[in-house]
Length: 109
Image: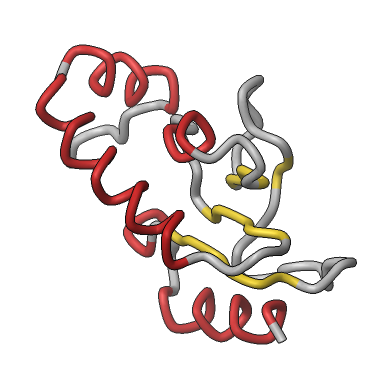
């Protein structure tokens, strides 16, 4: 079994691949267009790339790294104040996608 990359290693991969950044720039542009005003939380932010495109996003992950805003378990989200208007999650980084999605929906209402 391969060892998972650290957030720092993911950042190195991100920085080394301009085509990957171009694809995600388009995705981030669309996400920003579809977003409503209010708090947006990214779950599983890892290397923190969305925050570069949307600085107002609250970038979170289950591990602590200097470029993220908070350490949060996506399966046990606190109730935010003000309420969330949107969340973005990397389901591949969670152990239980169903529980994560359920927790995200509860926090967003």
